[in-house]
Image 1 (cartoon, rainbow, N blue to C red):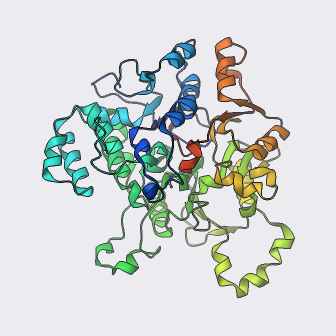
Image 2: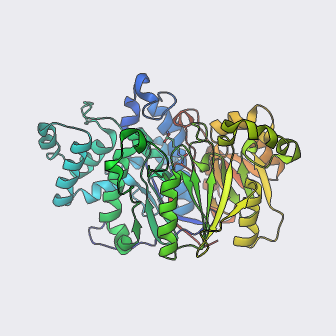
Length: 485
Ligand SMILES: NC(=O)NCCC[C@H](N)C(=O)O
Protein backbone atom coordinates (compact mmCIF):
# COMPACT_ATOMS: atom_id res chain seq x y z
CA UNK A 1 0.00 0.00 0.00
CA UNK A 2 1.57 3.27 -1.02
CA UNK A 3 -0.64 5.58 0.94
CA UNK A 4 -0.43 6.20 4.68
CA UNK A 5 -3.96 7.64 4.66
CA UNK A 6 -6.84 5.39 5.65
CA UNK A 7 -8.87 4.43 2.63
CA UNK A 8 -11.65 2.03 1.84
CA UNK A 9 -11.55 -0.93 -0.44
CA UNK A 10 -14.46 -3.09 -1.52
CA UNK A 11 -14.72 -6.31 0.44
CA UNK A 12 -17.38 -8.63 -0.89
CA UNK A 13 -17.51 -12.28 -1.87
CA UNK A 14 -20.79 -13.98 -2.66
CA UNK A 15 -19.72 -16.89 -4.81
CA UNK A 16 -16.82 -19.12 -5.79
CA UNK A 17 -16.92 -18.23 -9.47
CA UNK A 18 -17.78 -14.53 -9.87
CA UNK A 19 -14.95 -12.51 -11.49
CA UNK A 20 -12.12 -12.32 -8.98
CA UNK A 21 -11.23 -8.67 -8.30
CA UNK A 22 -9.06 -8.68 -5.18
CA UNK A 23 -7.39 -11.36 -3.07
CA UNK A 24 -4.84 -11.93 -0.35
CA UNK A 25 -1.83 -14.12 -1.05
CA UNK A 26 1.56 -14.76 0.46
CA UNK A 27 4.63 -15.58 -1.65
CA UNK A 28 6.86 -18.32 -0.23
CA UNK A 29 9.23 -16.60 2.21
CA UNK A 30 12.67 -17.48 3.53
CA UNK A 31 11.10 -19.53 6.36
CA UNK A 32 10.10 -22.26 3.90
CA UNK A 33 13.73 -22.80 3.04
CA UNK A 34 14.50 -23.56 6.69
CA UNK A 35 12.10 -26.43 7.33
CA UNK A 36 14.13 -29.43 8.49
CA UNK A 37 13.05 -33.00 7.69
CA UNK A 38 12.32 -33.91 11.30
CA UNK A 39 9.91 -30.98 11.64
CA UNK A 40 8.29 -31.08 8.20
CA UNK A 41 5.29 -33.16 9.35
CA UNK A 42 4.83 -31.14 12.56
CA UNK A 43 4.75 -28.06 10.40
CA UNK A 44 2.21 -29.76 8.11
CA UNK A 45 4.45 -30.25 5.07
CA UNK A 46 4.92 -33.67 3.50
CA UNK A 47 8.54 -32.98 2.68
CA UNK A 48 11.13 -30.25 2.69
CA UNK A 49 10.98 -27.98 -0.36
CA UNK A 50 13.51 -26.31 -2.62
CA UNK A 51 12.65 -22.70 -2.05
CA UNK A 52 14.21 -21.18 -5.14
CA UNK A 53 12.45 -23.65 -7.45
CA UNK A 54 9.17 -23.19 -5.63
CA UNK A 55 9.38 -19.46 -6.11
CA UNK A 56 10.93 -18.97 -9.54
CA UNK A 57 9.51 -21.94 -11.41
CA UNK A 58 6.15 -22.20 -9.68
CA UNK A 59 4.67 -19.55 -7.40
CA UNK A 60 5.96 -16.57 -9.41
CA UNK A 61 3.80 -17.81 -12.30
CA UNK A 62 0.81 -17.75 -9.99
CA UNK A 63 1.50 -14.11 -9.14
CA UNK A 64 1.98 -13.10 -12.77
CA UNK A 65 -1.28 -14.80 -13.74
CA UNK A 66 -3.21 -13.19 -10.92
CA UNK A 67 -1.85 -9.78 -11.87
CA UNK A 68 -2.67 -10.30 -15.53
CA UNK A 69 -6.31 -10.93 -14.62
CA UNK A 70 -6.76 -8.57 -11.67
CA UNK A 71 -4.29 -5.72 -12.21
CA UNK A 72 -2.90 -6.03 -15.73
CA UNK A 73 -1.14 -2.65 -15.73
CA UNK A 74 1.46 -4.15 -13.41
CA UNK A 75 2.59 -6.86 -15.83
CA UNK A 76 1.32 -6.32 -19.36
CA UNK A 77 4.28 -5.96 -21.72
CA UNK A 78 6.73 -6.44 -18.83
CA UNK A 79 6.92 -10.21 -18.43
CA UNK A 80 10.32 -10.61 -20.15
CA UNK A 81 11.82 -7.79 -18.11
CA UNK A 82 10.40 -9.17 -14.84
CA UNK A 83 11.66 -12.66 -15.63
CA UNK A 84 15.13 -11.36 -16.45
CA UNK A 85 15.62 -9.86 -12.99
CA UNK A 86 17.64 -12.42 -11.04
CA UNK A 87 16.93 -10.66 -7.73
CA UNK A 88 13.13 -11.16 -8.07
CA UNK A 89 12.56 -7.78 -6.46
CA UNK A 90 9.20 -7.57 -8.30
CA UNK A 91 7.86 -10.21 -5.92
CA UNK A 92 9.36 -8.96 -2.64
CA UNK A 93 7.17 -6.75 -0.45
CA UNK A 94 9.11 -3.69 0.63
CA UNK A 95 11.75 -4.03 -2.12
CA UNK A 96 12.28 -1.38 -4.75
CA UNK A 97 10.44 -2.57 -7.84
CA UNK A 98 7.86 -4.54 -5.84
CA UNK A 99 4.60 -4.93 -7.79
CA UNK A 100 2.62 -3.29 -4.96
CA UNK A 101 -0.90 -3.95 -6.16
CA UNK A 102 -4.12 -3.25 -4.30
CA UNK A 103 -5.76 -6.15 -6.17
CA UNK A 104 -3.22 -8.90 -5.59
CA UNK A 105 -2.20 -8.21 -2.04
CA UNK A 106 0.53 -9.99 -0.10
CA UNK A 107 -0.21 -10.35 3.62
CA UNK A 108 3.41 -9.48 4.31
CA UNK A 109 3.00 -6.01 2.83
CA UNK A 110 -0.13 -5.42 4.94
CA UNK A 111 1.75 -6.55 8.02
CA UNK A 112 4.72 -4.29 7.20
CA UNK A 113 2.30 -1.38 6.86
CA UNK A 114 0.55 -1.81 10.21
CA UNK A 115 3.90 -2.29 11.96
CA UNK A 116 4.73 1.35 11.19
CA UNK A 117 2.42 2.19 14.06
CA UNK A 118 4.41 2.06 17.29
CA UNK A 119 1.54 0.90 19.48
CA UNK A 120 0.72 -1.99 17.17
CA UNK A 121 4.41 -2.84 16.83
CA UNK A 122 4.83 -3.02 20.61
CA UNK A 123 1.69 -5.09 21.10
CA UNK A 124 2.52 -7.55 18.35
CA UNK A 125 6.10 -8.04 19.46
CA UNK A 126 4.86 -8.79 22.98
CA UNK A 127 2.11 -11.14 21.77
CA UNK A 128 4.38 -13.07 19.45
CA UNK A 129 7.12 -13.34 22.04
CA UNK A 130 4.45 -14.57 24.44
CA UNK A 131 3.19 -17.40 22.23
CA UNK A 132 6.71 -18.26 21.04
CA UNK A 133 8.11 -18.13 24.59
CA UNK A 134 10.95 -15.79 23.65
CA UNK A 135 13.34 -14.24 26.13
CA UNK A 136 12.98 -10.61 27.12
CA UNK A 137 16.25 -9.94 25.29
CA UNK A 138 14.73 -11.19 22.06
CA UNK A 139 11.78 -8.92 22.63
CA UNK A 140 14.10 -5.94 22.95
CA UNK A 141 16.11 -7.01 19.93
CA UNK A 142 12.96 -7.17 17.81
CA UNK A 143 12.03 -3.57 18.55
CA UNK A 144 15.14 -2.44 16.67
CA UNK A 145 13.92 -3.67 13.26
CA UNK A 146 12.25 -1.61 10.55
CA UNK A 147 8.55 -2.46 9.91
CA UNK A 148 9.07 -4.35 6.63
CA UNK A 149 11.95 -6.36 8.08
CA UNK A 150 9.97 -7.05 11.24
CA UNK A 151 7.10 -8.38 9.12
CA UNK A 152 9.54 -10.77 7.45
CA UNK A 153 10.84 -11.90 10.83
CA UNK A 154 7.36 -12.48 12.25
CA UNK A 155 6.46 -14.60 9.24
CA UNK A 156 9.70 -16.46 8.57
CA UNK A 157 10.81 -16.79 12.19
CA UNK A 158 14.33 -15.86 11.15
CA UNK A 159 16.53 -12.79 10.84
CA UNK A 160 18.17 -11.63 7.64
CA UNK A 161 21.47 -13.05 8.92
CA UNK A 162 19.79 -16.52 8.85
CA UNK A 163 19.54 -16.79 12.65
CA UNK A 164 16.28 -18.49 13.61
CA UNK A 165 14.32 -17.03 16.51
CA UNK A 166 11.25 -19.22 16.34
CA UNK A 167 9.55 -21.61 13.93
CA UNK A 168 8.68 -20.42 10.43
CA UNK A 169 5.08 -20.19 9.18
CA UNK A 170 5.42 -22.30 6.03
CA UNK A 171 1.64 -22.64 5.73
CA UNK A 172 0.98 -18.92 5.43
CA UNK A 173 1.17 -19.39 1.66
CA UNK A 174 -2.29 -21.01 2.13
CA UNK A 175 -4.02 -17.73 2.84
CA UNK A 176 -7.45 -19.33 2.33
CA UNK A 177 -7.21 -20.89 5.74
CA UNK A 178 -6.75 -17.73 7.82
CA UNK A 179 -10.26 -16.45 7.20
CA UNK A 180 -13.06 -16.15 4.73
CA UNK A 181 -15.15 -13.32 3.34
CA UNK A 182 -18.88 -14.07 3.57
CA UNK A 183 -20.72 -11.38 1.63
CA UNK A 184 -19.25 -8.30 3.35
CA UNK A 185 -18.34 -10.02 6.63
CA UNK A 186 -14.89 -11.38 7.45
CA UNK A 187 -14.81 -14.60 9.44
CA UNK A 188 -11.46 -15.19 11.16
CA UNK A 189 -10.32 -18.75 11.76
CA UNK A 190 -9.38 -20.65 14.92
CA UNK A 191 -6.69 -23.00 13.69
CA UNK A 192 -6.73 -26.63 14.73
CA UNK A 193 -3.00 -27.09 14.44
CA UNK A 194 -0.41 -25.46 16.67
CA UNK A 195 1.81 -24.84 13.62
CA UNK A 196 -0.76 -22.33 12.37
CA UNK A 197 -1.43 -20.39 15.60
CA UNK A 198 0.88 -17.45 14.89
CA UNK A 199 -0.74 -17.03 11.47
CA UNK A 200 -4.09 -16.23 13.06
CA UNK A 201 -2.57 -13.78 15.50
CA UNK A 202 -1.03 -11.90 12.56
CA UNK A 203 -4.32 -12.09 10.65
CA UNK A 204 -6.20 -10.68 13.63
CA UNK A 205 -3.93 -7.62 13.75
CA UNK A 206 -4.03 -7.13 9.99
CA UNK A 207 -7.82 -7.24 9.71
CA UNK A 208 -8.43 -5.08 12.74
CA UNK A 209 -5.76 -2.48 11.95
CA UNK A 210 -5.06 -2.18 8.25
CA UNK A 211 -6.89 0.70 6.52
CA UNK A 212 -7.98 -1.71 3.79
CA UNK A 213 -10.52 -3.13 6.24
CA UNK A 214 -11.38 0.03 8.15
CA UNK A 215 -15.03 0.09 7.02
CA UNK A 216 -15.51 -3.56 7.88
CA UNK A 217 -14.19 -3.65 11.45
CA UNK A 218 -17.70 -4.15 12.83
CA UNK A 219 -18.14 -7.00 10.41
CA UNK A 220 -15.19 -9.07 11.53
CA UNK A 221 -16.42 -12.25 13.18
CA UNK A 222 -14.25 -14.09 15.68
CA UNK A 223 -15.40 -17.59 16.57
CA UNK A 224 -16.00 -17.91 20.29
CA UNK A 225 -14.29 -20.63 22.23
CA UNK A 226 -16.29 -22.90 24.47
CA UNK A 227 -16.84 -20.48 27.36
CA UNK A 228 -15.92 -23.18 29.87
CA UNK A 229 -12.90 -24.45 27.96
CA UNK A 230 -10.42 -23.52 30.65
CA UNK A 231 -12.38 -25.54 33.21
CA UNK A 232 -12.45 -28.69 31.12
CA UNK A 233 -10.13 -31.61 31.89
CA UNK A 234 -7.37 -31.92 29.28
CA UNK A 235 -8.83 -35.01 27.56
CA UNK A 236 -12.27 -33.41 27.23
CA UNK A 237 -10.72 -30.29 25.72
CA UNK A 238 -9.73 -32.40 22.74
CA UNK A 239 -13.24 -33.69 22.27
CA UNK A 240 -14.84 -32.32 19.09
CA UNK A 241 -17.98 -31.33 20.92
CA UNK A 242 -16.01 -29.00 23.18
CA UNK A 243 -13.31 -27.77 20.87
CA UNK A 244 -13.78 -24.71 18.74
CA UNK A 245 -11.57 -24.83 15.66
CA UNK A 246 -12.30 -23.75 12.12
CA UNK A 247 -10.05 -23.15 9.10
CA UNK A 248 -10.98 -21.22 5.96
CA UNK A 249 -10.55 -24.21 3.64
CA UNK A 250 -13.69 -25.60 5.25
CA UNK A 251 -15.84 -22.56 4.49
CA UNK A 252 -17.19 -21.99 1.00
CA UNK A 253 -19.30 -19.04 -0.04
CA UNK A 254 -21.14 -20.76 -2.86
CA UNK A 255 -24.02 -18.34 -3.43
CA UNK A 256 -25.10 -14.95 -2.06
CA UNK A 257 -27.32 -16.47 0.64
CA UNK A 258 -25.79 -19.95 0.97
CA UNK A 259 -22.66 -20.97 2.86
CA UNK A 260 -21.03 -24.39 3.13
CA UNK A 261 -19.08 -25.36 6.24
CA UNK A 262 -17.01 -28.52 6.32
CA UNK A 263 -16.55 -30.51 9.50
CA UNK A 264 -13.21 -32.17 9.08
CA UNK A 265 -9.85 -32.93 10.61
CA UNK A 266 -9.59 -29.17 11.20
CA UNK A 267 -13.09 -27.80 11.75
CA UNK A 268 -15.25 -29.01 14.60
CA UNK A 269 -19.01 -29.31 14.75
CA UNK A 270 -18.90 -27.01 17.77
CA UNK A 271 -17.26 -24.19 15.77
CA UNK A 272 -19.58 -24.77 12.82
CA UNK A 273 -22.58 -24.39 15.13
CA UNK A 274 -21.19 -21.18 16.59
CA UNK A 275 -20.67 -19.72 13.12
CA UNK A 276 -24.17 -20.75 12.07
CA UNK A 277 -25.68 -19.10 15.13
CA UNK A 278 -23.79 -15.84 14.51
CA UNK A 279 -24.43 -15.65 10.76
CA UNK A 280 -28.14 -16.36 11.08
CA UNK A 281 -28.47 -13.83 13.91
CA UNK A 282 -26.77 -11.18 11.76
CA UNK A 283 -28.82 -12.20 8.73
CA UNK A 284 -25.71 -12.71 6.58
CA UNK A 285 -27.02 -15.85 4.84
CA UNK A 286 -30.27 -17.88 4.77
CA UNK A 287 -28.87 -21.37 4.32
CA UNK A 288 -25.88 -23.12 5.83
CA UNK A 289 -25.00 -26.61 4.73
CA UNK A 290 -22.70 -28.63 6.91
CA UNK A 291 -20.64 -31.19 5.04
CA UNK A 292 -19.06 -33.71 7.38
CA UNK A 293 -16.10 -35.43 5.77
CA UNK A 294 -13.85 -38.18 7.14
CA UNK A 295 -11.26 -36.85 9.55
CA UNK A 296 -8.23 -37.77 7.55
CA UNK A 297 -5.01 -36.03 6.61
CA UNK A 298 -5.75 -36.81 2.94
CA UNK A 299 -8.86 -34.65 3.03
CA UNK A 300 -8.01 -31.98 5.63
CA UNK A 301 -10.60 -29.41 4.46
CA UNK A 302 -13.64 -29.67 2.17
CA UNK A 303 -11.81 -27.67 -0.52
CA UNK A 304 -9.41 -30.60 -0.92
CA UNK A 305 -12.25 -32.82 -2.12
CA UNK A 306 -14.32 -30.43 -4.25
CA UNK A 307 -14.26 -26.93 -5.73
CA UNK A 308 -16.36 -25.10 -8.27
CA UNK A 309 -15.17 -24.59 -11.85
CA UNK A 310 -18.10 -22.67 -13.27
CA UNK A 311 -21.71 -22.10 -12.35
CA UNK A 312 -22.74 -25.49 -13.67
CA UNK A 313 -19.49 -27.44 -13.18
CA UNK A 314 -17.64 -28.87 -10.19
CA UNK A 315 -14.53 -30.99 -9.69
CA UNK A 316 -14.66 -33.61 -6.95
CA UNK A 317 -13.35 -36.87 -5.57
CA UNK A 318 -15.62 -39.68 -6.66
CA UNK A 319 -15.04 -41.93 -3.67
CA UNK A 320 -16.75 -39.32 -1.49
CA UNK A 321 -19.42 -38.61 -4.07
CA UNK A 322 -22.56 -40.43 -5.19
CA UNK A 323 -21.96 -44.14 -4.94
CA UNK A 324 -24.91 -45.69 -6.76
CA UNK A 325 -27.00 -48.71 -5.82
CA UNK A 326 -24.13 -51.15 -5.34
CA UNK A 327 -22.62 -49.01 -2.62
CA UNK A 328 -25.96 -48.46 -0.96
CA UNK A 329 -26.21 -52.20 -0.38
CA UNK A 330 -23.27 -51.77 1.95
CA UNK A 331 -25.62 -50.05 4.39
CA UNK A 332 -26.33 -53.40 6.03
CA UNK A 333 -22.61 -53.85 6.58
CA UNK A 334 -22.27 -50.33 7.94
CA UNK A 335 -24.82 -51.20 10.59
CA UNK A 336 -22.38 -53.73 12.03
CA UNK A 337 -19.24 -51.67 11.39
CA UNK A 338 -19.71 -48.50 13.38
CA UNK A 339 -16.26 -47.23 12.46
CA UNK A 340 -17.00 -47.19 8.77
CA UNK A 341 -19.74 -44.62 9.34
CA UNK A 342 -17.08 -42.18 10.40
CA UNK A 343 -15.46 -42.54 7.02
CA UNK A 344 -18.60 -41.39 5.27
CA UNK A 345 -19.64 -38.01 4.04
CA UNK A 346 -22.80 -36.65 5.64
CA UNK A 347 -24.64 -33.51 4.57
CA UNK A 348 -27.13 -31.54 6.65
CA UNK A 349 -28.75 -28.34 5.44
CA UNK A 350 -30.01 -25.69 7.87
CA UNK A 351 -32.35 -22.84 7.01
CA UNK A 352 -32.56 -19.64 9.02
CA UNK A 353 -35.49 -19.80 11.42
CA UNK A 354 -35.81 -23.57 11.02
CA UNK A 355 -32.51 -24.63 12.49
CA UNK A 356 -34.12 -27.44 14.44
CA UNK A 357 -35.40 -29.21 11.38
CA UNK A 358 -32.40 -29.61 9.07
CA UNK A 359 -32.70 -31.48 5.80
CA UNK A 360 -30.34 -34.34 5.04
CA UNK A 361 -28.93 -34.36 1.52
CA UNK A 362 -27.96 -37.77 0.27
CA UNK A 363 -24.74 -37.06 -1.59
CA UNK A 364 -22.33 -34.39 -2.72
CA UNK A 365 -23.51 -34.28 -6.32
CA UNK A 366 -27.09 -33.63 -5.21
CA UNK A 367 -25.91 -30.75 -3.04
CA UNK A 368 -23.71 -29.21 -5.73
CA UNK A 369 -26.37 -29.60 -8.44
CA UNK A 370 -28.90 -27.93 -6.15
CA UNK A 371 -26.53 -24.99 -5.61
CA UNK A 372 -25.96 -24.62 -9.37
CA UNK A 373 -29.66 -24.79 -10.19
CA UNK A 374 -31.47 -23.25 -7.26
CA UNK A 375 -28.94 -20.76 -5.89
CA UNK A 376 -27.13 -19.76 -9.06
CA UNK A 377 -30.04 -20.16 -11.45
CA UNK A 378 -28.32 -22.47 -13.96
CA UNK A 379 -30.60 -23.78 -16.68
CA UNK A 380 -27.87 -25.92 -18.27
CA UNK A 381 -27.01 -29.46 -17.24
CA UNK A 382 -24.82 -29.56 -14.13
CA UNK A 383 -21.54 -31.35 -14.86
CA UNK A 384 -19.08 -33.13 -12.59
CA UNK A 385 -15.43 -33.73 -13.29
CA UNK A 386 -13.88 -36.41 -11.14
CA UNK A 387 -10.37 -36.45 -9.77
CA UNK A 388 -8.13 -38.74 -11.84
CA UNK A 389 -10.97 -39.05 -14.35
CA UNK A 390 -12.39 -41.51 -11.80
CA UNK A 391 -9.88 -44.16 -12.87
CA UNK A 392 -8.36 -46.34 -10.18
CA UNK A 393 -5.94 -45.53 -8.54
CA UNK A 394 -5.65 -42.02 -9.98
CA UNK A 395 -8.66 -40.54 -8.19
CA UNK A 396 -6.93 -40.73 -4.84
CA UNK A 397 -3.44 -40.05 -6.16
CA UNK A 398 -4.48 -36.86 -7.91
CA UNK A 399 -6.69 -35.68 -5.05
CA UNK A 400 -3.60 -35.93 -2.82
CA UNK A 401 -1.85 -33.51 -5.19
CA UNK A 402 -4.81 -31.12 -5.26
CA UNK A 403 -6.70 -32.06 -8.41
CA UNK A 404 -9.90 -30.94 -6.65
CA UNK A 405 -8.48 -27.69 -5.31
CA UNK A 406 -8.91 -25.14 -8.10
CA UNK A 407 -9.16 -21.36 -8.00
CA UNK A 408 -11.69 -19.82 -10.39
CA UNK A 409 -10.46 -16.48 -11.73
CA UNK A 410 -13.84 -16.14 -13.37
CA UNK A 411 -16.64 -18.47 -14.39
CA UNK A 412 -14.93 -21.39 -16.19
CA UNK A 413 -11.35 -20.12 -16.00
CA UNK A 414 -9.41 -21.95 -13.31
CA UNK A 415 -5.85 -22.33 -12.05
CA UNK A 416 -4.75 -25.77 -10.91
CA UNK A 417 -1.68 -27.98 -10.73
CA UNK A 418 -0.05 -29.31 -13.89
CA UNK A 419 0.72 -32.76 -12.49
CA UNK A 420 -2.76 -34.27 -12.36
CA UNK A 421 -2.78 -35.76 -15.85
CA UNK A 422 -5.96 -37.82 -15.70
CA UNK A 423 -7.97 -34.97 -14.23
CA UNK A 424 -6.66 -32.74 -17.01
CA UNK A 425 -7.84 -35.30 -19.57
CA UNK A 426 -11.28 -35.10 -17.99
CA UNK A 427 -11.24 -31.32 -18.44
CA UNK A 428 -10.19 -31.69 -22.07
CA UNK A 429 -13.04 -34.14 -22.59
CA UNK A 430 -15.42 -31.41 -21.38
CA UNK A 431 -14.06 -29.08 -24.07
CA UNK A 432 -11.66 -27.12 -21.87
CA UNK A 433 -8.54 -25.51 -23.24
CA UNK A 434 -5.64 -26.75 -21.07
CA UNK A 435 -2.61 -24.47 -21.15
CA UNK A 436 0.53 -24.04 -19.08
CA UNK A 437 0.90 -20.77 -17.18
CA UNK A 438 4.01 -19.93 -19.23
CA UNK A 439 2.22 -20.49 -22.57
CA UNK A 440 -0.77 -18.48 -21.50
CA UNK A 441 1.37 -15.55 -20.36
CA UNK A 442 3.27 -15.70 -23.66
CA UNK A 443 -0.04 -15.57 -25.54
CA UNK A 444 -1.26 -12.66 -23.42
CA UNK A 445 1.97 -10.82 -24.17
CA UNK A 446 1.67 -11.59 -27.89
CA UNK A 447 -1.97 -10.46 -27.89
CA UNK A 448 -3.24 -13.79 -29.23
CA UNK A 449 -5.33 -14.38 -26.08
CA UNK A 450 -6.71 -11.95 -23.51
CA UNK A 451 -7.94 -12.46 -19.93
CA UNK A 452 -11.26 -10.73 -20.62
CA UNK A 453 -12.28 -12.99 -23.47
CA UNK A 454 -10.94 -16.28 -22.16
CA UNK A 455 -13.56 -19.00 -21.53
CA UNK A 456 -13.45 -22.65 -20.40
CA UNK A 457 -9.73 -22.78 -19.67
CA UNK A 458 -7.63 -24.76 -17.21
CA UNK A 459 -4.37 -22.95 -16.50
CA UNK A 460 -1.66 -25.35 -15.37
CA UNK A 461 0.64 -24.18 -12.63
CA UNK A 462 3.98 -25.99 -12.21
CA UNK A 463 3.67 -27.83 -8.92
CA UNK A 464 6.50 -30.24 -8.12
CA UNK A 465 7.55 -28.30 -5.02
CA UNK A 466 4.25 -26.61 -4.16
CA UNK A 467 2.35 -29.86 -3.92
CA UNK A 468 4.69 -31.11 -1.18
CA UNK A 469 3.06 -28.48 1.01
CA UNK A 470 -0.32 -30.23 0.50
CA UNK A 471 -2.39 -27.35 -0.76
CA UNK A 472 -3.41 -26.10 -4.21
CA UNK A 473 -4.36 -22.81 -5.82
CA UNK A 474 -7.70 -22.61 -3.97
CA UNK A 475 -5.82 -22.86 -0.66
CA UNK A 476 -3.26 -20.29 -1.87
CA UNK A 477 -5.92 -17.59 -2.23
CA UNK A 478 -8.14 -15.63 0.08
CA UNK A 479 -10.57 -13.83 -2.23
CA UNK A 480 -11.81 -10.62 -0.66
CA UNK A 481 -13.68 -9.21 -3.63
CA UNK A 482 -15.50 -11.00 -6.42
CA UNK A 483 -18.20 -9.66 -8.69
CA UNK A 484 -21.58 -11.11 -7.79
CA UNK A 485 -22.28 -14.29 -9.77
N1 LIG B 1 -7.46 -25.15 2.34
C1 LIG B 1 -6.50 -26.07 2.35
O1 LIG B 1 -6.77 -27.25 2.14
N2 LIG B 1 -5.28 -25.69 2.69
C2 LIG B 1 -4.13 -26.53 2.65
C3 LIG B 1 -3.29 -26.40 3.85
C4 LIG B 1 -2.03 -27.22 3.76
C5 LIG B 1 -1.16 -27.07 4.99
N3 LIG B 1 0.07 -27.75 4.80
C6 LIG B 1 -1.88 -27.59 6.20
O2 LIG B 1 -1.76 -28.80 6.46
O3 LIG B 1 -2.52 -26.83 6.91
